[in-house]
Length: 96
Image (cartoon, rainbow, N blue to C red; front, top):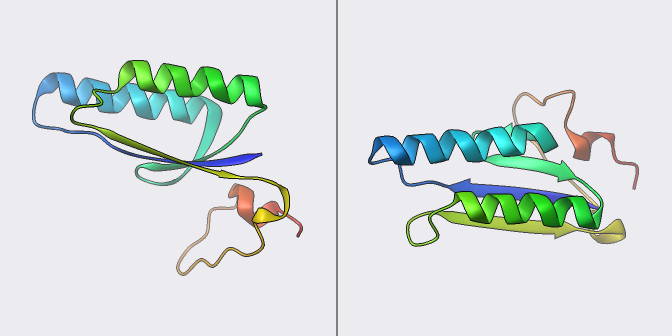
């Protein structure tokens, strides 16, 4: 299953900046960055649950936001990209 994970972290303080880096590092270990705050993550259910838990533990849910789009099987039928495309893009490699 592919998960599209998007986040927006408050960046007013140094602790906010540390939290931003921590979230990015977590996602870089498990997924592929497609934009500054957007990652494609392909993990089995238990692995993704652990990642989600780690992300939620890191976030300040009063100030930050996390969006997770789960794309299962035939739900993904088309990806449209304008501009340069990264060769590691998971959607580019899917055969539908």
